[in-house]
Amino acid sequence: MSPSNLESGGMMERVSWPETWMTIASAIALRSYDPRLKVGAIVVSDDNTQMLSVGYNGNYKGGPHKHESSVPGDSGFIHAEVNALVKCDFNFHKKKHMYLTHSPCRACSKLIVNAEISRVIYDIEYRETSGLEILKSAGVEVFNLNQAILNASL
Image (cartoon, rainbow, N blue to C red):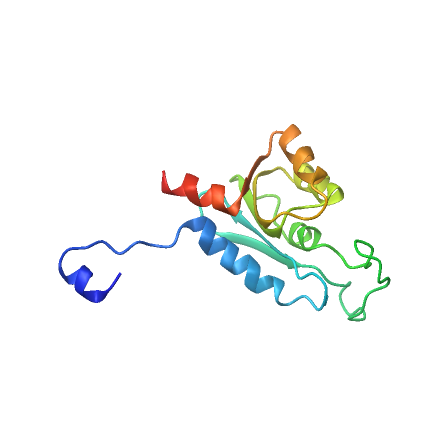
């Protein structure tokens, strides 16, 4: 909105929380040295007042910055979701939401369920989507980014 609209009493629209958090997850993904797929994950409080942890796909701390395999899905890198979950404080009493640049795989979805993440918002659907079904069947709320933005505006 232009400054003249503000001067005439117009309201400036703010970016929604889902857009804000996904922007951060996307920036975190840039830390990955995986040339094929850069994935970012963040865990936030359900009231949007705290960012609790971040993660991106990569190797173990101090490990080489290269794939173990060139086969897609078998790079040997630790997934962004796992890196975010291992850094998260599980004594935190509020519900937690996870924002992902890409929808989670089956194994990460199981970890997300066990970590009691109550909502997952993803931007890009990964080629294999059975992880989303695991989340939904376990009662985790799942939204793609566009759905989350619409829900935030209601």
